Image 1 (tube, helix red, strand yellow):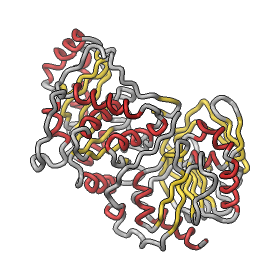
Image 2 (image 1 turned 180 degrees about the horizontal axis):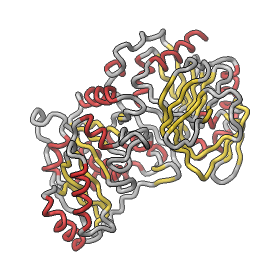
Image 3 (image 1 turned 180 degrees about the vertical axis):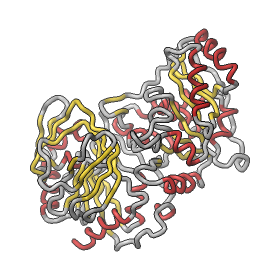
Image 4 (image 1 turned 90 degrees about the vertical axis):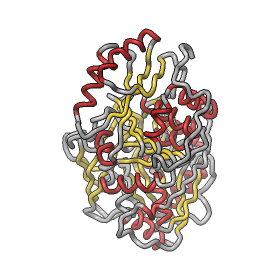
Length: 482
């Protein structure tokens, strides 16, 4: 089994609770597999640093229900414990799709119990009505218990406990408002853990919160992947269910991936191509990658070579293809601009026909210039005849996209589902866009994306999990160029 961490809304502390539970479990020298509902990149980075295993995204809109069920089964087989972090509020899914893609949808698909996190900072007796509503709204869901977050005092906790007592609901965790733990945020959510200077103290603090704030005697059986088949995990003396009343560096983390995408791809997955040396931009500026995408590329014959547009002076030797993922180029625009040799190398390689796939932050890097959050403008690669600047409005939502031309990734009229999540805007749209969009937050269809030379560049983030023919086509383009 496993458990799904859900919230009554966004911002209630699901990620803090999830990370604290994961850290406490990991300190017990057990194997822990985490999952994240939805198209998130940043929270899974934190999960992966804590567990030392890649976090897997469960998104039936970008993939399919069958895919997430198979993915979950595959990656829990070699783990002692498993945990799923939800998205937004429990029943909040894609707009206009009846809750599809919500935390509740995933819990039903995987038949997993829920742990509901509540922000109690402004709640007293009303907490009972809130919990009753969430427990009774969908009879197909099983609420295993609640975590009371941001509890103000012992008196406040007593009031909450008294209100919940008639519901006979288990309180599996209590986090006090005074808890000093604070995960830093910025314009797109949490600051990625690879950028934090004090990672080890954060992990230690998460572990301590995990040890002291949860009822482990009730929680461990819910988290175990095979209850009854594993040796009991010793509970340390610090595992007491109580809470005291008061209490820009770049890092690289080696995350072990024990699984091959071969176990979870479509039964008609293409045959691997001859070994292709694929350069993957990966540093503090570019780090938005689904673990499944990278696994699938390796399964299909790619040799993944990680390099840094921030620090390296050129592309890796023998590069036959280039993958520029999303991230935060706006936070490192001056450093990216100062690395003129790499910008020139990337531009020259693309002009010479190097198959290149760029998403969101990768697209921004390929523009002529980038205006950062402070209003300063810096030169970028310049392969795309447009500029990009940061905007106050967030562009967010799932997109149904149909390709309008052949690119290194897609053939014309291919339909894909993707996700947009960015605070930047291009000064000029492509004259020959690669997509027509429709989506939950769009009032009318839009055109988007660039394809010049042998490049596919778009704001659209794609998960290739159940569409292995897409990365297979890209690697075939790399093979043909060779």
